[in-house]
Length: 88
Image 1: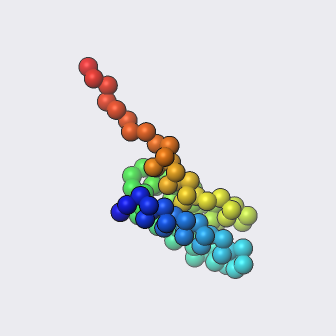
Image 2: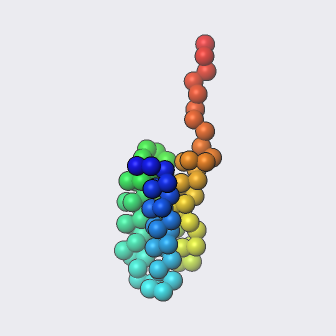
Image 3: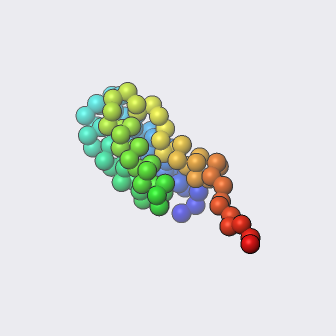
């Protein structure tokens, strides 16, 4: 999947998190679903850690303003540098 398609999905998922401001019960459905989507979008250890953070952020009241999916996209494609193996 292209990084810009992941960005679009991430922005959509963050927008879905704001629905709970209108319908607070939506968090009961969205919190576990957001964790699942996070693990599918971002693989590996980072994706699993982000899924836990996403679940907690969506489950707790008033933390829905944090754009977790967008932050994960920024971490993955902007801030994360590739580890290079030193030559011996």
